[in-house]
Image (cartoon, rainbow, N blue to C red; front, top):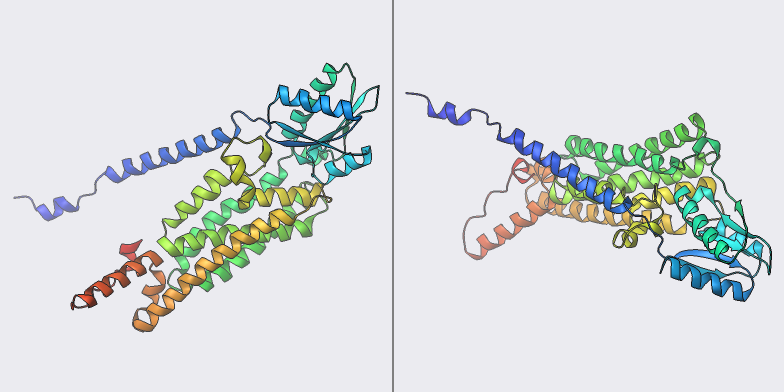
Length: 372
């Protein structure tokens, strides 16, 4: 008679097929996210600074509204210098200067993004043609030869994000039996080294984002630390599967709408509203502005990175307090307590309270292997 216990222990290929199906699902979600973001770019409320006679400005605004409803917002400026200042600071994505007669000047900043520059130039050229006016183009901040495609800021962000996800998994597996702050200390070291490496490679080795090594390092440190701290917070709450939740926010959505390939104002509804508040876009915007657009304010991207970092640290602090409370109850289980996700601790507490209310013995705590 065959040994039934050995038959039960024989490996099954089911897990292999399950992993294959899960990987295909990941591919589908990634394609949907990036495809939805980039498949049909169109302007939405793109600000244009215009210094021109009042009648021309009104007709231009009406013409743009007819050609691309809701696509552009015309802001009147008193002088050509004011238009240039608005474009340099990115208070306006582009601009136009026109006199009573003669050619008009289309003002852009190529360093803010080639796709945005092309869309603005095309729209204003078509409008000027409708007014029977010739056009001249003025690129106030052109992309350098070392960054012709304008993708270096996106590469900078990607070089921080991917190692943050991989490193976050490694830090969790190696440090889950230690107190949370050991992992955060290691994450801070990683963030500093990753930021230095990314800034030096792009700036020194390739000459891209040139002249901004120090600001890039600061932005990169905050960005990488925000990435890995958010991953650690998700892991502290639900365990290793929390990495998937973090990847959904940072990779599947955040990277698709980071502004590296397409400006926020050209994204579809939904993505356009959340993009400026995700850390990916904050890193790309801050890196690009620090290197190419020094007149632009870094206030918003730094605020976004600060919010994500502060929120993640607050969650980690809450989990740490939960761990300390559990450790006081069972000091002999210290390593197991640190390795157990917060959601499991909460379930165990509820189970103990129900047992106490019913006068039953307290149930045994689940092991971290079961809760992950």
